[in-house]
Image (tube, rainbow, N blue to C red; front, side):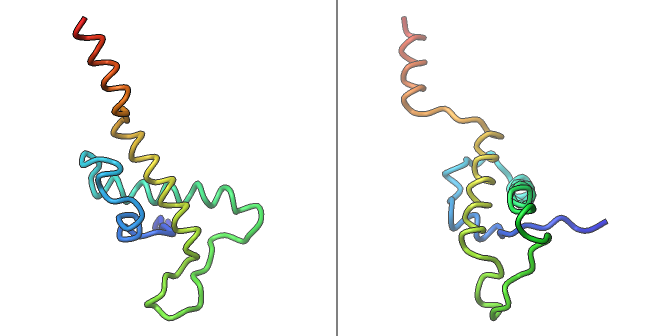
Length: 103
């Protein structure tokens, strides 16, 4: 069975969304799995137009192997999945809940 892969690395993920964006409760393994899942989701969108799996760009190794826009989109999907995993409560909603508890 082929090893699941991702279009973005954990380093890319941290550069796009620092840890504070998705919370400290999301561990390293969960972030890596979120990137793999997000890459699979990206494949579901682009699979009708391109042959999969995408081949890395033919550039020097110092440059990212995949298009930066693809990497950013994968990071956005992964960050959303991490936020959904840990839960999200906006500051405004927190104030609303707190005000109703005091009454």
